[in-house]
Image (cartoon, rainbow, N blue to C red; front, side):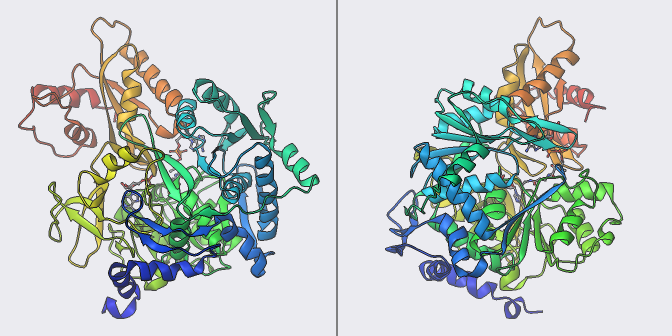
Length: 636
Ligand code: COA
Ligand code: AMP
């Protein structure tokens, strides 16, 4: 088969490289602008140039108003399917617009205006979509914080974003456990140096909470009052280059990086991806099974489907246990989803409970065309199982919080390319993906190296970190001049397929969640009995990786190590949150180090994973490795 004949990808990609302004200028025609760009790309603005310079736009208008005006008023914008509350709630485009206009007006009553930050700390409820779009409507910059993070993480984000308003809920619902959000919110506000002027809290019937007089406001009361007063907020024009949101992601220290997303580039790139990459047509039902706390949820639960006139499913449940391993197939079948996007970890969980796919065959999946996987490396056995069971194409694709959309994928809308297991396929238009050595010299096909993207990045990718241009340059642009450093390592094969094999920094990927081991080490080191520590990601059959902490206790500590280990596990849950899935703290006498004092994390990981390992030539004392092997035995 000649791939070139079958897919429009090659032509599209070549044009995006040859004539980026022509390519993205054309894609921008699908967006409603208040004023068009003065320059599709201005190389002199920002850290590496800016897209759609001078254009004026409103993101919420493109997500809602224009669809209501153009015949989609009665089409569902959102299906909220929540097995944990046993409910399905729907909103048409017209209903969603009304809620958003109202809530945006309520936010304006708090003095929230263009450029002000608003933190959203909410579970997967329709009101989270309302809050995000209401911010976009009035030009406020939202920053969503994932519910599985602890109070301290929320406090760090409050201090960095300095919000005028925090929007939250009384509780989230995890299987078998109600997560009370309000105590976490109160604690975060107490810990933060920035004084939060006001909070809006959605009271959920599963567990309500007390409101702090003068500071906290009840979502429903506010909404009803604003609606009764007939107040509605109009769309506030913003520059395409103004920030739409900040999303914090793990950095190499405990201080997360505030990835900024602009309005214009985001609109164009995300809207382009809905058909060209995901192959869905306006009007179809689309499901992205992530959380709004992650970039995947921003781009493909909230923005992408709405820009494109799709119906978006928001699922408040798990792949297994809510109530069983058939939950995904029930949702796809009940709501007639054409495509579904989730993380490989979810499939590993389903495969474990339903190895023969018996649940799959209980449901009519005739509308379902494609499964998309991202968030972590899609291991070939998981893809093969999904392909065999579902009998639809299973498409891995690779991206990062920083890019906001896919770097390498298989463009179903342009014409699907042959799938190679273990590869997310080819670079998307706008991304020149190179594999380079330490001197930024491109490496030949088949050779592993650092994966970098030639600047400028395409529309939708981060222009900078929130108020930290220098940190942005340091983190992404300085090491390989002229390139964006992905911090992923991998190679390209002779057909140009990209293979992403793992991170080059301290980030690990736990059940599709991005976490910094350096950040966890800071927490372990804060325990009064810990002298030294190392946290590394070790293999896990379901979550892909889980963190494992090795600790050396201070001389003179006589308490039982098992007690201290329990305290350390509790400390990570308290400081970072349950999402870290940190359950393994192991006391060791010494850590293996090089003669220059660097901890040999790679070797420890191999020992823990039961992989072959060799004694590094630079090791200070090889006997330590046997001690580590003995300490890990039976525990990992
Ligand atoms: N609020 C509060 N706590 C949360 C939470 C939230 N929004 N999300 C997860 N948690 C908690 C979980 O309850 C769990 O707590 P526990 O230690 O008390 O059991 C902990 O954080 C770890 O959660 P998770 O890693 O999700 O593990 P799990 O065992 O609950 O579920 C999977 C495992 C594989 C089923 C689940 O991780 C999954 O569906 N992952 C999909 C990944 C995904 O969508 N990633 C987004 C990027 S595409
Ligand atoms: P996040 O910023 O949370 O989306 O995490 C991004 C990181 O997850 C990437 O840098 C990769 O290490 C990893 N990742 C995401 N998708 C894939 C994929 N399809 N294949 C391999 N790794 C992936």
